[in-house]
Amino acid sequence: MTERPRLRDVAALAGVSPTTASHAFSGHRPVSPATKAAVLKAAFDLGFVMERDAGQRTVGLLLRPPEAIPGFASGSDAFTSVAGAVLVALLGAGFSVSSFLTLDDIGAQVGRLDAFVLLHPRRGDEVLRALVQRGIPTVTLDRDPDDEEFAWWISADHVANARTLLEHLLERGARRPALIVGSTRNTYLESIAGVYIQEMRSRGLPVLVRELEPVRGQQGGAAAAESLLRTPTPPDAFLTSSDVFAVGAIEAVQARGLRVPDDVLVANMMDSVIAERAVVPITAMKANLQVWASQLTRLLERRLNSAAPLTSHLRLEFDLVERASTGRRRPGPEPAS
Image (cartoon, rainbow, N blue to C red; front, side, top):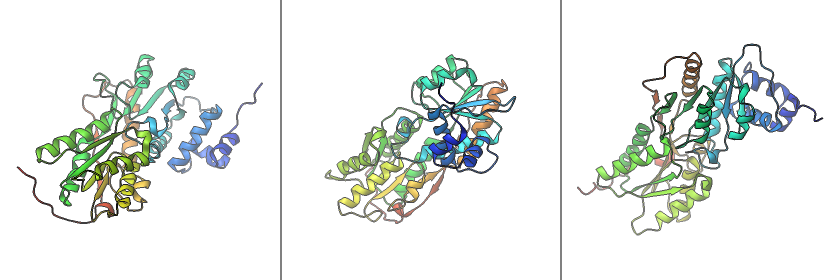
């Protein structure tokens, strides 16, 4: 008979001490979001189950790899930051948290779950459909664009955030800003593309879009930017949906002997450590993840208390963080009317 995994086994796999692993589960001491995510992933990989207190409710949290999450390209640390903040909020509210990587994994332990939190569902998300069909109280961060009936979600105001970032590029002198965006169909990416196309057309400016599969990451971002920079009338700015796309765009600009921001501006939709520490620090929209996660936890408690579905939904606006990638003003010619 295989020996049941112990806490020290989880700690060893996660690369932390048993004490730190224990704190990651209990929430009794501060542990970084990244460490919490690593510990919970190790627990899942080993099949470890933390004994919960009597009466404590267990919440499932799907930790799909970043390339499976709409809006978060391969290599981006944005999803880890969001997931970590949600973990901290759930543990702080007294929930026990079980992490999962696939729908099949959830099915094996569905009887243990009192509720579920799903981050960034994609269009027609099979996990969300399965959870609802199985009667598991579920809340989501962002919504499934194809599911008009599901009411238990909160979201960032992607439309307002995208408009703020695009207007910032235009104010800094951009007249041919291009969009590099992930190809997955979801609220986040469709909002960005929709705002960009609408604003460019209304201003009489050219629409320059490249869609990428998120798994292409930084390399894909560089290739997309390079293809646009080779055109007879190349862009003078890049707006990206992923931090690694933005890093790739900077790489392509510099490879052509151009400079960021003097020749080409770069800005990204979601702030992250990658954006902050890029070779040219990247201007981005920054979320208050603690507020986001706290509101999601409150929504979950409302759902578990059998309150009525929401008739209006919280949409959080982000703050613009200006960095070197857009750090110059260069008034350009007015667009043709």
